[in-house]
Amino acid sequence: MRPQFLNSPTRCRPIESYGFAGLAKRMRTMFVIATVLLSSFTAPARPADAASTVCNLHCDARDPSLAVSVRQAAVTSVWSRVITLYVSDGDDMAWANVGTGSPGDEVWLDRSFDGGQTWAGGSKLGDTTIPAGSTGWRTMMYNIDDPHDSQVGVIRACGKAGDRTDIACTSWQRATHAVVCSTSCDARDPSSAVSVRQAAVASVWSRVVTLFVSDGDDMAWANVGTGSPGDEVWLDRSFDGGQTWADGSKLGDTTIPAGSTGWRTMMYNIDDPAKFGVGAIRACGKAADRTDIACTQWMRSTTHAATSQAAAVTALMQYFNPVTGSWSNSLGWQDAQALTALIDYIRRTGDSTYAYAIPILYGDNKSSNFTDGYMDDAGWWGMVWLLAYQYTGVTAYLQAAEYDANYMSQYWDNTCGGGVWWSTALTAKNAIANELYLELNAALHNALSGETTYLGRARQEWAWFAQSGLINSGNLINDGLNLSTCRNDGAPTYTYNQGVILAGLGQLYRATGDTSLVSTGDAIATAATTVLTANGILVDPCEPNGCAPDGYSFKGIFVRDLDDFAHVTGTTGYDSFLSNQAASILARDTDGDAQSGLYWAGPLNAVNYADQQSATDALVAAMG
Image 1 (cartoon, one colour):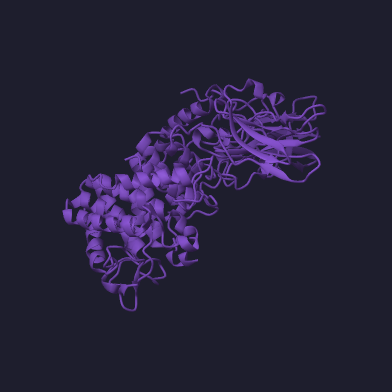
Image 2 (cartoon, helix red, strand yellow):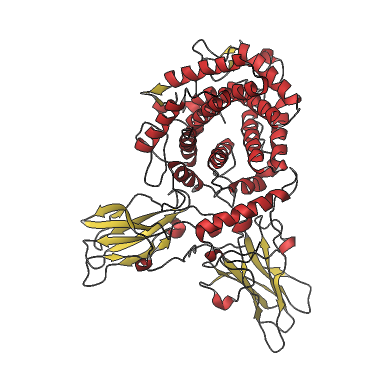
């Protein structure tokens, strides 16, 4: 982060036999299998070979005549042969066709689970040739994605003339998911809904637009009432918390027919389990003779929302992109926070519905070793991979954590008496990098029996930190040191700086039994929960002016680490404080889609994944 910026098994059982809950169970099983294959830090993290038989809504090698929707996705040619890729978005499957050819001409599919970088293991899916007496032929249908093995795919059609070596392939394509199928497919009649509730209402020019949700189906429909013929009603569906919905805009778009004053759409799925799509949905409508549009708030079903914590984690997962393996557009330290919040929730509750995010994020981003030149970022990733190892037992995650700890250690020197630098540029020695260095090394020691190197580093770090001046006279930690004087820089006392040191002290106390660490931690925690609050609710120093994006995560880190410190030291003294944060978030800072914003005391502002991570941390911490 950049603190200085803050001033501004039957594999082929079809998925429909499971439903969304069954999919989660199935994915948990496959996840365990996948962990065995993730055996080293540098080994490929593909749980299943692209050539393996894949079952999604249907299993590979399905007859194209059964496709529920068909579009010509891409075309190429070779020696007058026309190679065409057809995609059935409703099935999340594709097939290849060769035309204007001769007997013996070949056609097949390539499927890739890394965006088209490699496909050797899955090359020539459905490989077939034009039979005698024909000028064209096609493969069977094959799945594009493999949700059971946590893989998002692309596919292409390839072919060649029988008497030539030249091969032509179309561009890589994926399903657009204009049609989503889960327990049922989109456009189901609402009369078949297994449960119905009125989820949200909006109005425009006396027309009442209502969103109805069938929780048992994980589907919804829109209704317009008190209207006139020609009035329009539709649904919008989003898979990023309502940030975008272009691909699913105006789902079920329809108008009130002659002689009626109301009408409704068909039912549409809220979630898309085949693509790990965690959705939100809203109803919209307009009068026929007006341009004004009214939409309800974004909502979702009660699926995966049995508790406030489950609802919050589900809202967080709305922002996860399984194609990039991240919550953000480019992997950053706040992705580590989101993954930490998720793993913390899983470990506390046993609900592994979204555990697929762990191997996807790791597999898609491990080439960077999760370092970017900033020591605090390395510390965040080291901590989350240690948590992932403790949850899964996958040694690759432990190796990632150790790599990051060793990377950080290279940037310890005697400038200002010790400490690690903030970045490879050697421009600052700040609190957060050193707090994380303490926490990560102490935690690694605690995770590894008989280990001494990490403990030595943690002891050295705390000995330096305690006398560095970073802890001010009010028992709060400022942002860093002034390199000219090697004294406290007087910069803001951000909440996360108070939290991470508590986690570090807790881990070192667990390693050594030194009770002075608990006393120091209690003094910091008492100051933070008193000074950095308004009416008992946390307020970060940046909030009055609106925090820059880095600041969205800060309070969640604090409460998560305060809770960790309390658990390690065996105190219940902060339970009421943590409960009050969660209660305020739910009462004043959460919408109907379980999304929360920056201001825990309200009002709810714009929502995003980092604010959602922070609120999720608070709700999980309040579980005690």
